[in-house]
Image (tube, rainbow, N blue to C red; front, side, top):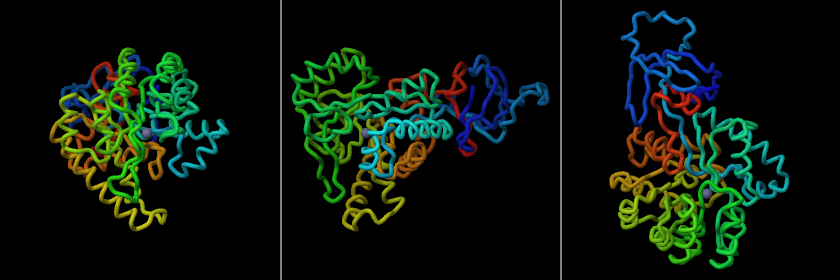
Length: 389
Ligand SMILES: [Zn+2]
């Protein structure tokens, strides 16, 4: 049994039953408590949270953990990662996929790091060989230590279009319908559909082509919804985002060049937005000589627009998730999540609201509502200790 101590970047081994003095706690359900609290847990789950002043003696129960500089929080979730990518060199990494043991060693390291940094759940956007699906199963079997992995296994893209490393590619909807049953049977937590190509760093407003018509995408979405599976859509640009909204996906990933009209429709349809700022913002935050000054200028424009739109989404009460696209260049696993939270604050979302999105809302987007909460009964391994709230 363990609890993540994200401030120290470590996990602390704890007994199945115990108690600790903590400096307070915060959760979307319970709000903020900034006074000393006695936390007790039984069978690995929180059993009580009592203000310490109410207790007769502070010295009672000598076996208490002294965590009095830490505040207890629900663990974070990152709603968009790619465990099979290394955030350093995309093409080299894809070559390395031919040596699975190498990739698996990387992934084990990332998983450990996620836990050490307080991230107790990750939603993986897939890879063709199925590394993230393997990781999910290894964690579930207890063979690997890591956060709960929600994996799309393999993404659905149009053959010959963007996304070759994410999925096998389907020529058309009839090929999809032929293989649909087998596709779902290989195991899948959510369905990821590639709706558009990538944005370009050298051409503002340019996005790779839209891969599906509304009717085709609706067919894909319905095939998942019939099985009670959520649909995450990789989509950017005015046209692609419109198609995704109309087809009724559950979340829009990236969504660069989102418009106000899109946000209004998303609010109406309760579609969540995972704006993945880090892959753009971190290139500017951690400069290198990889990009030209024209590309840097374009990235700045994209970043500014994205941050403005995120603020608008928040004000409009659109569901917003915190997801990094970790594994992308300059977005290291686990650490990148802290960059993404900072970007959300830069967009003007108050800190504790970012925390709510990073816990409760992310858990809903990931289809795991039992995560991202702190209440009586919450498993200790889904929580974290932080010393700066
Ligand atoms: Zn992705």
